[in-house]
Image 1: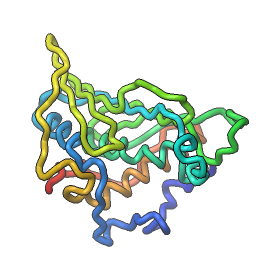
Image 2 (image 1 turned 180 degrees about the vertical axis):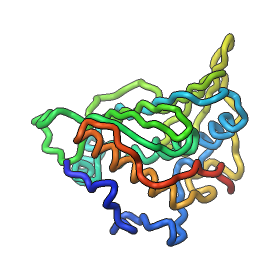
Image 3 (image 1 turned 90 degrees about the vertical axis):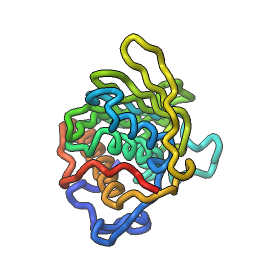
Image 4 (image 1 turned 60 degrees about the vertical axis):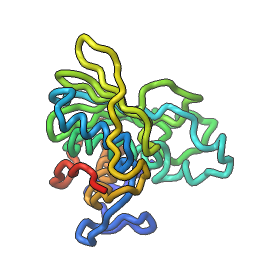
Length: 238
């Protein structure tokens, strides 16, 4: 797959609804739901200490099973990284801060001859966040099904397990030394809807930068910086 170089991103992405932050864009996403809100509150309250590591997984079949005419998924700009990955990466940026550099690998050339997909169906990467935490990212739509956790965040004092960020709610569980996994009270400002509140357009652009840079890093087999000076998003408000 040929990706647009991350240093050549336009001020707007035609047909995507993404525009430059100067346009005053605000977006709605699953980070506005109760799942990520609850986890964000736990991180901000210091329940797991200093976050040092995280993992995020997509291990599921592609959309061709429920949606046979889903050929757009396999074209450039599709695949698990661009289709569902934005939910995972947005959640990680909210919890751990912006991503400063990445490295990745994709499938070997001409792997999976049975499918003529133009988009990568598997991307495995490392994200280094500005605060020093590292995220292991696995985006795979070639699996029959998986039971891996969707997102876990590990800190110096405990761990968090999040629900699938492709939804807007679900239980968040905390584990601390000497204890057991326990559900956290839901942080619910005004319901669990995806569009409860607003998230800045800068977040959408940063996530796009991260995904494009991951593909560049996978192509070249190197660590690459994620351009731009990004701050951790404020906690979502209604």
